Image (cartoon, rainbow, N blue to C red; front, side):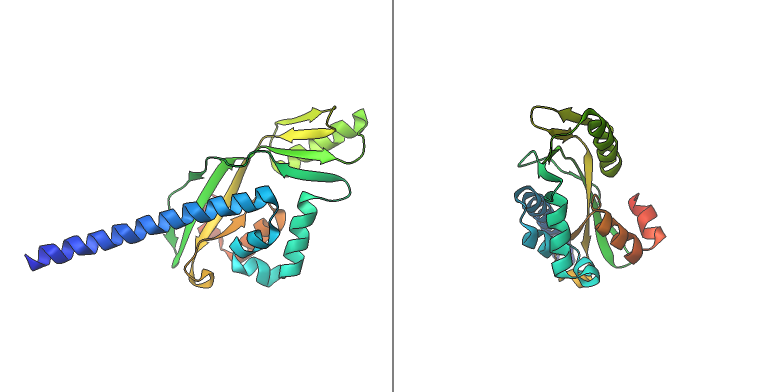
Length: 193
């Protein structure tokens, strides 16, 4: 009887811990997206994988985030306050837990100066390349582009994250490069990245 009770308690504690981990992952993902939506760069830095800040520095990270969202040429805004996330399986690889999170992410790029027809073609091609999408629609009245794309966050839970989920935004070229540098090919292959 005691063995059955111990076994039941063991399985309950494991499932509780696993569900807590999933709940924490879902909450942290929503917080990261919300921080991007509101351009809360401090929160984005806080939720980013610690090695990102360690490699490029906090001030540099904040500056890069700011320039990505607003600069002399354009302003980038996420269009939806909330989006449905698709969570891949949580994978334990080399003592680290990973989860690939994808979501449809409509964005709008508002250009500061009126674009000529030639510039519209040039910027359309550029936006398709940097956003890895074919769906880029110019809206002349707003002097803006509506970009529909799939975005990817990689959530990581390991010894460097203080038992919390931290993220790489794989849409960000700097963060993608740091991810590629830190993690080996076998991890990337197993995650399908």
